Image 1: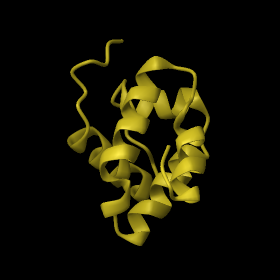
Image 2: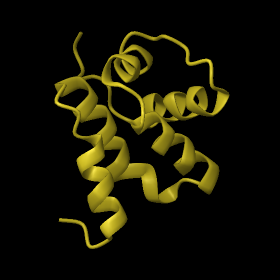
Image 3: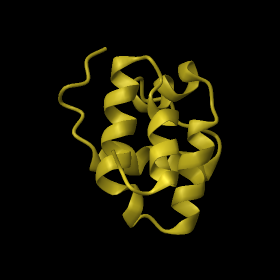
Image 4: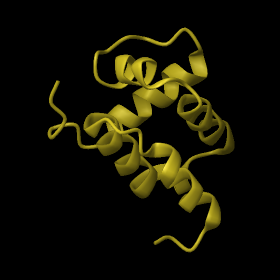
Length: 88
């Protein structure tokens, strides 16, 4: 378990109940979140506030978010996380 309470809380927020989303979001959180700049962290938090079907559309189906900050963090998540194990 991570020592930082913020990361522990985010870990629970990243657990969406969909295997594909869990892999992408938790992988990104564990490997890259702490290296993000504040605006990127804020965009990631806004992404986590969205409903699962929307997040799934962005991360797995390739739908482009209208919000430019969300679009940028989706791009970052997909480029920095191993997506080879994610099957649709």
